[in-house]
Length: 238
Figure 1 (spheres, one colour):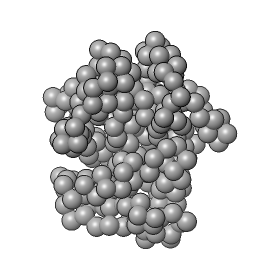
Figure 2 (cartoon, helix red, strand yellow; figure 1 turned 90 degrees about the vertical axis):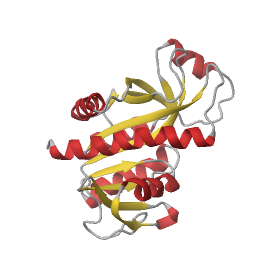
Figure 3 (cartoon, helix red, strand yellow; figure 1 turned 30 degrees about the horizontal axis):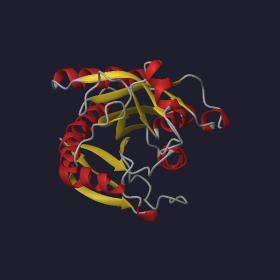
């Protein structure tokens, strides 16, 4: 079966899919971490791969930027390809002054300025799958990876007209801002799949600090490996 946006064959995807926004990051994951990786879809250059990590089958599929794009791929993966869980692996901007760049954040829940969750009838609040939170916490602890868990803001706007949203969410204790998690958690709740989002903090929106391109890649790789280990641990625990 193919869909309007995915040209993979039936059975091409593993039960768990890692989902970066960037198609080139999807390729990087496949090239760097997966054994016997095969490209399974490339419609609109939105790349997807399936291979093995530590002997266990896993897939990676890009989402593009923003909730509308992500919701398309999430829906088609779960509804038409039988994907059981999706782990978003991305980057985010920091809202809390005491959080440091390079920190890995896991989104327990999301708040958003988008009306998509309401329009598609998603449950409220917008939350991660509890079992997946348990799995990633255990995997991080066993691999000595520092995690910060909390609320993220999923925004429809990258270039905000002023600092009002940042100031409000910082005051409310929101950890970071990104553009896809609310779509992931909402669509998966409706479609009956498990969902988890994790990020590397790369841009500090309070202090103005930013990671260089080289620092981003090296730091993001630690988060990507955590995502892969969480994927195989979640599969084994079913």
